[in-house]
Length: 640
Image (tube, rainbow, N blue to C red; front, side, top):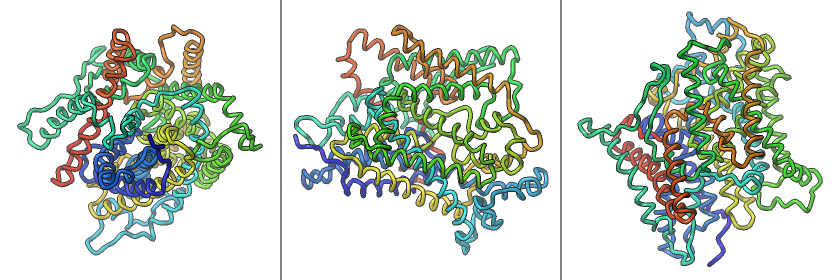
């Protein structure tokens, strides 16, 4: 067998082309066609879809022309990694929040909300588009003779580019530092990455068509979501066509809460690769949390805390944040020996520490982390947040990013959102008076980079770095692929989304009015009804952190302990509502298979469940392409 090629210039160039496709296709599919949201989760389904197409077209085509021209393992990993990174930008990763939030306060200002007098004089205008006509044309569409007023857009976009460059430098560097600890020392499963790993696996004969695509079990699993979701899509085209019911809600506690039994092949497929202990914890703690909420609602027990914005849930959000903090700090403690080695390599150049298998040296990663965090600190201070309070935002943001990336890497959940964001965390912990008027208004714009966390960059980075472990030889060149993917996706997707808005009017697209108004609405609410540091918030965080710590200790000390700590943490996330039943089903199937068939049967059944997950993604992509040609709007196959 020939040695697999590493990262090549060819693979980076192909990856760049695919990043352009994603940067244009994702906003087009999301905003104009409003079809299947392939780039709306941190699982980056669009990367899976395009990778499937690539392996069956370009890879086969090159190999048929000349066998040695076929894409090699390292090249395929590079391309997939770049596509995952690019997928985290065009929708809610950047554009879906950035563009409406830096324009909305001017378009939606009215005499009733009085933003013009109470908010606008104190805005950090250098990060906003404040040209009234440019903003109006963005929301309502430009005239046939009018173009895009780039002179109004480029200064604020340039300012935000500086921030995103700092943030991406920091999270990429931190991800590199964490990779060996998560992949090699703790051996996290990375269920999401089982699909691309299986897709690129070779056999001894080195057939051009990978073994994955020659598996009848895989195609059997693949066919099930294809049939179901095709029926679902055809009903949207032809209402007389039989409809497919994908969820059955059941009211509990006299309709206080709703238990949803959902059908999701994507989660059933990925769920089969989750550790059984983790899977049990996920559905058990979710049900426990749901019934706890139902009990409190049934007996009219409500949180007395002040509102903290759209993406922060007082009480339960604090509890989740406490659990996240303990998870991240415990991870740092468990990996302390690794992190000491990283520091020795970075500071002293310790020759006994090998970092040759990382996409950047440990010295570059440590420096990049520091430079990126300091850059974010200075940038946020310049927007109006007091210098000493900025670390509160950064601490919360990094805890959320690292904690959620860890959860997604270990559980394979396609999406997972925190019930608290840095804006709510800061207001709850330091109070409105400490932030001041300008600081409170600037706080609203922290929601641009850490608000609706359906998609965030650190999750695909963590998954991509797991794949990079499969590359033979040096993978340093892959860092250039990651940087190019970020740059291409930022520039191309921002340009194309603005183009769509000026052509069709963003009010006619899926650019949310809620996102556009939330920064000023939140700031106005807190200015009019200021709150101080929340004692109850501290107690909720203490409670959540303490319980999480006890679960971590119990898991470490008692081999028989069945309740995984991640289950408690994930139970707070609303995304579990529609997928808990699939996790339960995957868990019970896996338990039965392992008990009665052993590891051998489990391995034989893996292709079937990989096919389930991939088939769900691919049929969503196929129908999105069909919708693009037919002009169908709103034919959305649910992925989560």
